[in-house]
Length: 538
Ligand code: NOJ
Ligand code: MG
Image 1: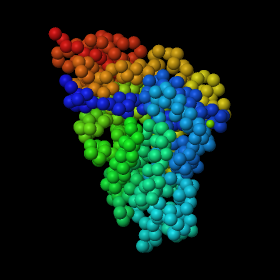
Image 2: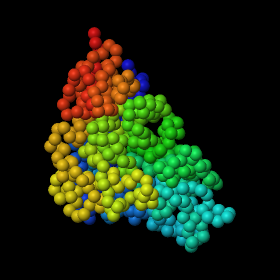
Image 3: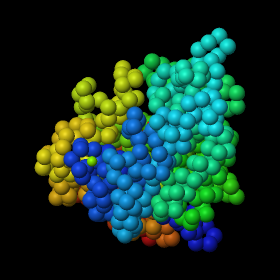
Image 4: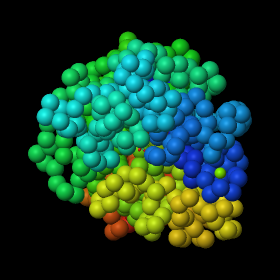
């Protein structure tokens, strides 16, 4: 067998294809100055931990100057560092130290909206004649009064905010403190491209691009159609289908321009945050002669039920949806999603780790998942997530996934000498990095074993992929490269299951198990995942 990705000449696999990405949420990683909030010096102090985790790149959630209405996703200066996190010198030190360890550094670019405190918006709202007026999306009230159209903010409520001074509404897809930028304006476009240049000139290795599919709205801003399938368990946003507010052709053209700019700098990666069905998601790769993002983030392991039938279907459908030149990617956690261990339990979270690190495509790990942080109770008086505040009846709180990293058993888990901005996981005295480094059966040990295996096993990093036949409740697939052939069998239930081998092969070696020892008695134990090397049975 030969991998489709490797047919013909030996394909070059840039670092973002063979590598593993680790998302750092800087507020919650490591505090260095006792204010209870993580910072860049804190990340620097923990770089050896990240390198030893066996990952290749760090994606830093936003560290730019910001009023923090949405914890940095409201940017007030795209080319600076918030004093809470440090300064440009601290950033340069972190970048150099990361590079010295062979780690790439990816920044979070937030192009859809700025902060309402950004000088551009302050100018824009100052008068209808201001040169920056058109850098944002201003409209008169609807003919009968009220907002210009029916669009709903992703965080609930109208997407329009009335501005009494100039007598118009402005659009905000998220908080009113996050006005949407107008990417149809050439001067705004140029200014944002300059932002990308600023950071690439400094040496950053790429960008994760926030809500990329939102950045252009349909001409005329028509009402969005109602969603006939909406139920009250869903967010208010889901009452409408975002047909005219997202995924416009002009946004694809801008992504292609960003890519052309990035390609001019060598091996820099663009990762687009994009939630869409497979067919429309795949279009964000662009075309071979006019590519768009390298990796449109694939959140399907987060969004779907955890059972073999569903996973089989989404993995096969996703693989089938990719254009021939499109490289896959997978995610099981983020600062926006529930913790994987909270969602499916710790035993299955170990299986999920194996899935993430053995599927074809670039894996992105989210800080804290590698030690299996599970449910965290956030008392009402400590809720900080503005999305949660605005829709309190829904089970959507993002604070639960943003709690500080517990490093050791000292005060505040070694995260801060002050008061952590969010509570720690209640089990931090035992669930912390130090404790797990000392325990060869820990989740952290499993993650490190899997990243190490991936690093030395081309079949896992860049090899071919095909679904295999598994027993009920078992997800099975093969990976291969040259003569190396692997079977991954993941038991998604707590009962033992049969291990089914492809015809004509036998097990040569057990490379990894999610269970502490590697019991090989021909069965798959409950909650066990296995990576097996196969050989021909002659
Ligand atoms: C996606 C980010 O991941 C999320 O945290 C943020 O609230 C929204 N985009 C708005 O920027
Ligand atoms: Mg701090």
